[in-house]
Image (tube, rainbow, N blue to C red; front, side, top):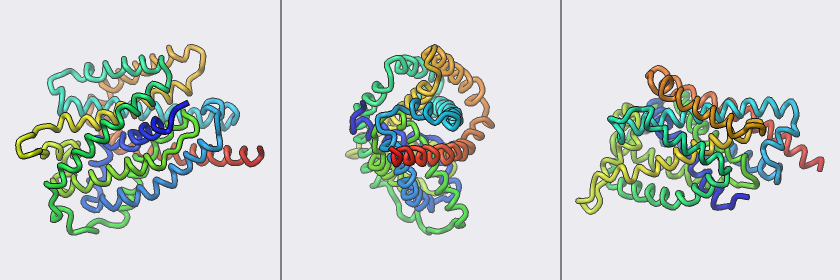
Length: 343
């Protein structure tokens, strides 16, 4: 059984996991400085969907996700297939974008295949020890990550220019709705992975994670301006280069940027374990390891190698994962609520 702190920390990382390389640049490209409103409104809408997940956790009680889906028979098989696609897709996205991030800023001369190989081997090792390992690691990384995030946010406020944010309401309502959709999808959908644990509550961790994202969005636009922010692929990392502490401590972006690496690591680990739980029990570890290796090879030989494939993932991920979310979560919610009322 996972603790409240472990659940809180894990969902905090999941809320932020899809914004590195996708969330910020994608939304800024649509609504520029109005992206701040998209983040705030998207958070309010996201709370509703997170509440549905919390209710499912409450209604299924001590049942595992596999037990619940097996009980649902045909409908459960349908949901399991969608969940497997969902988990594999997000795992592919995570490995692809962590390679891009690392090769662009940290390991410029390192071959792409070598960057994510240690991570894949670590995922295989973690899967052998069960899901509790990831939750415990998340709870250990959370105070470090939050402290680094807090330091970066406080340090960056001194470089913010309000003139970069004004004028507001420069985009069409349809564009704002588009950005709200993207934010809600990217921040809420990974919380599906929390269904692998029992009796977790994700609302407060979602709000905290969203708060850090909203402040980060404000700082991105206020520091580099909406035009430059829409051009950068990783604007959330670029602004970290501005940080100077006491006017002589500088170039600490790689240290402060570890918080984004932690987000990605927990998010990818949860995606991996989510897929493992849904696989058949017989030869489970072997099948899961083979799938991880297949995704690893596809991420650097196919998805991350060609720009067109990266762009496809960039725009396709938020739409596809939200479609799966909006199909599966209401079905689970109504089934578990009906079952609880009958009991």
